[in-house]
Length: 403
Image (cartoon, rainbow, N blue to C red; front, side, top):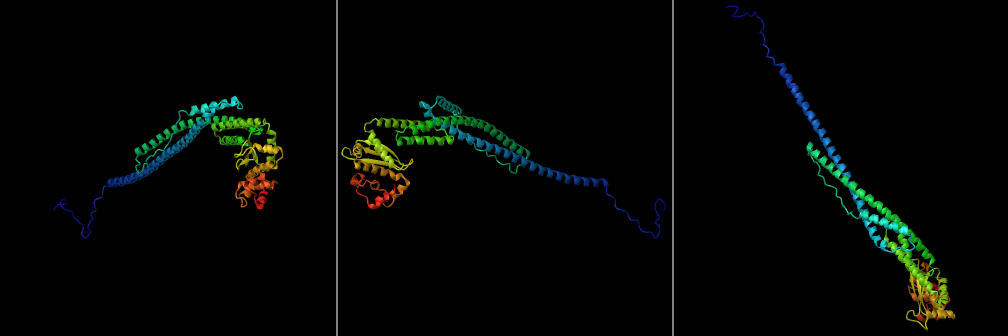
């Protein structure tokens, strides 16, 4: 055997161990880096998804808030415009009859024209306007669909609606401003007219001493009601007409009162009326005179009294002509009857009404007036005894407390 064909192994030596084949080192590094990239990419994707979700939610919520704010503003302006339009229509309607009424001499021409011009301006500003409503749009929520194109569409839609509402709000706000300005001009000029009418009315109430109290009550109420309207910035043309009508009423009563003073019997009537007022404890009395009262005329003394608790408490006493004749020659029964009628009026006094309503009289008008006249010293038939009988001593004593 040749050296080429065999090899010699030392005697008694250990057997050699063959190592396993080594894995390629480059392929291992590729696997590690690939795994790391996948993990990193997954982390970045998850983070980006979370960030987009937050941004999407923030964008759609903000758009919703903007739309809600625009809707609230438009709703408020729409309501205010509606109120202003209603007030304008009411003012114009109330002034229609007044503006067609002839101007009284005690109202200055300039003041009257200022109100007419303001009324015309308010009419022009409101003529083509109608009541409007606004209902906030119902926009569906995005929900769980937060894909970019869904979110973008939702935000753009809400923003477009907000812009439309803002434009409408500006238009209605301008209409509101015009109405408010015109209404202020009407209110101001209305107040000026009222002041002149009221001032004249107060003068009439004071100066027209021959007018009846009854004729002055409507004027007093009209002036007070008009003052309330001015205080509340309301324009009520009907109230202005009421004042003018009431002034006419007092003037008519004043003329009638002055004419009555030309009657030959007036001096005696004036004495009787003065006496009645002197014992009335401040109760306001009106007087009427007729040939017959309650169907009784010549040969009879007759009178009636209508008392009223409102307007400070007052009464109207109606007497027949024979009373003035009896008074002129000193008939005590004539004076007793007048006292009886004044007694009726006393129940409007709070301290006397309690006595009148109480158990002694239980609102018996005639017995009360008779007892009151007797307590005034007229224990005679004309006090009411002849017509209604004599009250009890207790009744006379109770009525006597009303003096």
